Image 1 (cartoon, rainbow, N blue to C red):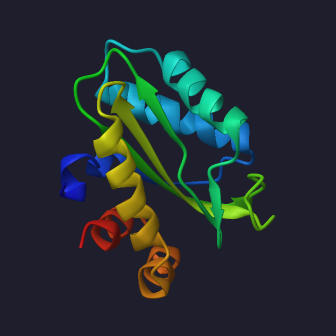
Image 2 (image 1 turned 90 degrees about the vertical axis):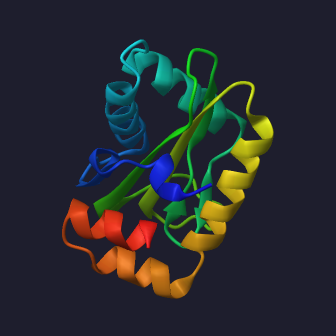
Image 3 (image 1 turned 60 degrees about the horizontal axis):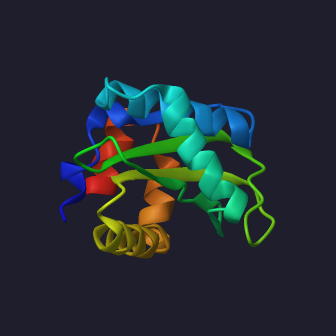
Length: 147
């Protein structure tokens, strides 16, 4: 799947959320615009439920929060670059500054796993990660991740 089909430019942002809870709320608010039938609270609860199973902080300053929702027809992604890294309970105990969130329909489990895997692989590419961290605005961030 082409990343640009699930990640829209308006779902890419540079922010200073301050905490894990705040960044999950920000992701929820951004994603809710893509799904007018869902509240940001529903999205937040989906992300939080997944985090309770174990942190989605995969190390090296990266987190890939994700959730499944019954009331959506298509996946949507949100990309956030934190200006100030935040504690995220990552596996390497390091703070996180790059978050790629994915919300998928409940019935698309296989596609969900494939997308998460390919995104983790892309974010673990040192060149891509360095470019993401050097970006200074949303437009640059979107360009780097979708190239």
